[in-house]
Length: 181
Length: 116
Image (cartoon, chains in turn green, cyan):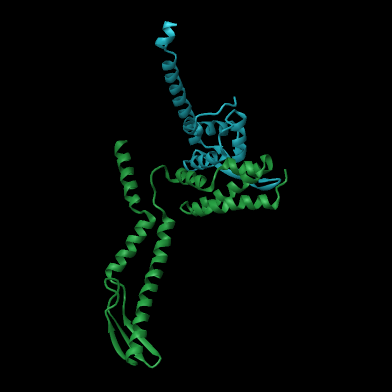
């Protein structure tokens, strides 16, 4: 049975969706999995039709879960991809927030006083005090770095997004298993 | 044999079935599914077979090689390793013990049958 372009698209859609959900697999294994699923689906599609082939392989979410369980076991596991996204996106968001607040302060003092040097306490708990020097159209900032609280929030978000506490539970289960043996 | 099987039971013996099929001869993923279906396991879905093959690969019980396919992408053939042969022997023995135990219980007469 020949496979038309629309059926190939349906297969590619499932492979792509599967790929997005198995990012926690080692890279080589993920790529091999993607290729194998595609090859098997094309073969099954030629054999029994694409609709039946897709039905028999199940949804991408269930399939991804099976692959993750096959790789890491049945226990709750951390999400490295979630941790990486959180680690990358949280500083962007925090810096955007803090810079918007600083810009608001700068615009305010410029409108009220024109030129000069002004002290700003920064966002409470999140930012050290900073000094804004306005001279005509020039604005110079000093200070305003993250406080330890901000780093702690960043770390907490990474831990929650990646469910990293499961690492500790998993390693303690492995130790318990080794003791049982 | 085309009756449906208990998915939980199948899940427990899928690795054993795969090891045995691959011990008979090396096969690629979809071929394994077809062989399972031909053996009567029509309700074994690809979505559980492919990850199970992956697990056997990770555990070192099978190894793979890519073979060009005439009409599509290369096929990944699975075959048993030495570890796989040992696992098959152990699992087969465990299965035999399990079946013998279950059969011994099931063969006991029930009170209602004794009375009949």
